[in-house]
Amino acid sequence: MNLPRIVGFSGSPRRPSKTRSLIEAVAAEVASHRQVRLDIFDLSDAGPGLGAALHRQDLTLPAARIIDAIEQADALIVGTPVYKGAYAGLFKHAFDLVDPRALVGKPVLLTATGGGPRHALVVEHALRPLFGFFEALAVPTAVYASDTDFVEGRLAEAGVRARVSTAAQQLAVLIGTEASKAETVSSLPSVNLQVVRRGAAR
Ligand SMILES: Cc1cc2nc3c(=O)[nH]c(=O)nc-3n(C[C@H](O)[C@H](O)[C@H](O)COP(=O)(O)O)c2cc1C
Figure (spheres, helix red, strand yellow):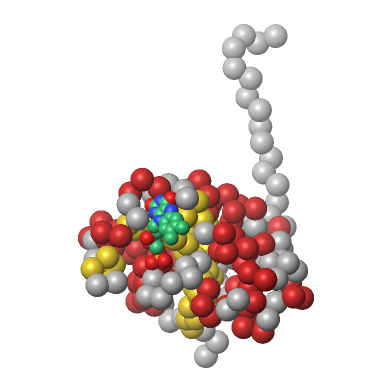
């Protein structure tokens, strides 16, 4: 059977990693809703060849495999640790090497982890615009988790777990829909907007 392929990508250089653990929690939840093929990568999988590459053709094989997987996935679960109030530099660098047309209409679930709650909106202020650039189909509910939401490296906080469940359900629904097919999105009929004048008629 040809199962939809979900690719998780964590922008943390560390192992164990809370960001990866959050992505795994989301992926497990998506898998409870529908059958999928799942691959999760992080910066250690990419190796030093990711940061050293200025262009796609400079990538080492392990790093190139990850960028290829991101481009070819049916859906993505992305996550980054918050560094200085934004996404990690190498997380962004990975997407700098992704073809700008490769994610059009692709369902993407946005996640981030930080030391505390102060930068929770990084998912909205940094990640959502990045995937807006790609014209990806970002899932409405994004997930942020702080250090204290994890117990022994696993996501434990009930509120964040509930958000994971909501976001995963949204992703599961979007995978394989007409809206998620790139060619369909770019050929959607333009909406015929009717301008209604308010105030006194002339
Ligand atoms: C260089 C650096 C900068 C950081 N900056 C922030 C920050 O601005 N805000 C925040 O909430 N946490 C910050 N943190 C904490 C990490 O985002 C947090 O511990 C994260 O969950 C680590 O994820 P990981 O376990 O996947 O590596 C920073 C950590 C590092 C190493």
